Length: 98
Image (cartoon, rainbow, N blue to C red; front, side, top):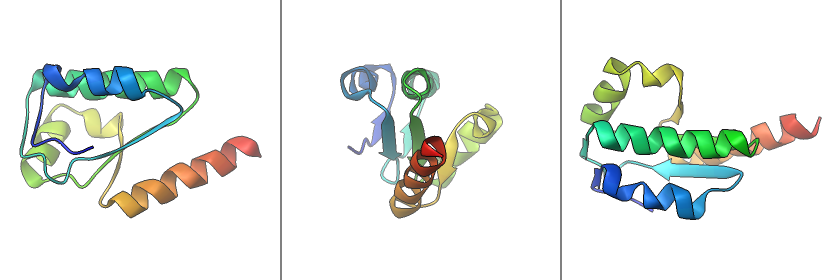
């Protein structure tokens, strides 16, 4: 799913799709506020609690700056493209099986 804006109103998405992995393509997201960052943290926590992987990808420059300023780039797994996010999830699944 892609969002043009990410805020607290979108956090339902994580609660209804939570599982072992979420790959979130934010390439069309032009705006994110503090409640959107909170929603991302919820998604990350839900995946972590199920020993899964949460990856965000395709960040536009404004969103990337906000995540960096918030120092959340050290918390989230971030890839430039959705294909790289898919590869990252696959590699982490293999590592967990070893």
